[in-house]
Image 1 (spheres, rainbow, N blue to C red):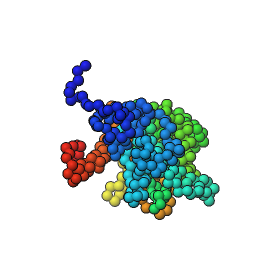
Image 2 (image 1 turned 45 degrees about the vertical axis):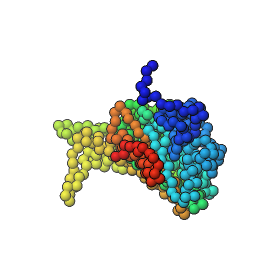
Image 3 (image 1 turned 90 degrees about the vertical axis):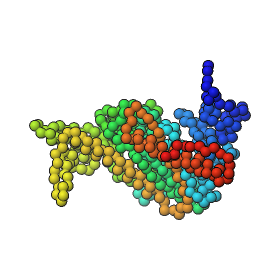
Image 4 (image 1 turned 120 degrees about the vertical axis):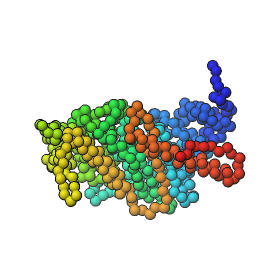
Length: 449
């Protein structure tokens, strides 16, 4: 075996094996970092500190390290007093917020499937547990139960995941949108309210998926037949292959139980205080999007103009959206365009109409998703006095496929910008601090643009 000189690195003494904070190593270089992470991972220690950061390696299985006892074990502990954990990062942010009287941010970065969304949920679970406001469940006049603020903050995740997460080549539960969750606290550190901002929902997935992927989870939850009344109400079948928009890739995922997930989604809608009518409307719009993919059009004889090829599917979609079926088809085949001060009717070819249907389905789905976020925020805004917030950012992770499209450009550009922000914040500013203090230091270029 011949190895080049520049590929040989000094090994750390055995006392640094499986060390919790890699910044303590005598020799800090890539092989040492990877070896330490590998050794800790082999012992199911998935969290490791590296100076100011915490590195997480996805175990791809459930580990019993997130239960309430563990939450309490990390409460109020200094970083070095307990093993590395996402709860420790969360507790530190909480304590710094109270002592420094400053807002805090937790930035979770990594490629697709690294475990960002799960760790985001753990951060939220931690704050919801240690800063619980102690309020009792709200019994509404209508007699329906809504959860406490803690329950509602935790329930926002399964609902947004049902409509915003999907199976991709890289990850069975990939976030196809970014979210920034702000958790607001009162002056004493009690939970006061929360709000969520979302970014870049991948609309194209509504009408198209790659071979090994699925559309958004909600479509398969509905067709799982766990709630047969939904099948009847939405005029759909239990076979996803009957609907073109949701069956271009796979329709089942071994790691996901769509029936169980439907119950979680349904329960989250209730906990978050949506009315019965709003809940019905959410399901109906989702069903309408499924029907849109089955609309068929044909070319009129001796003309380029498109006309409906049967109206049964349009009748279903229009009924679910509260529209008149004839009006819907007329608007698709003969759209009115404003020219100057007048409206003129424009002819459409079959391809143009199909594109219009796809655009309509994507727009309806996105608007419904954004409306749900607005409604969740209304529910999470308790109007209680709030002093500080801790922000948690969870975005779609870096990904490269065999066939990359505009969505990958958006996702990867966002990841790149975040990485640069992270580098700038952690390294460049730190180097400037060294310079001020006159520490001898060889400056490193982090490839900043």
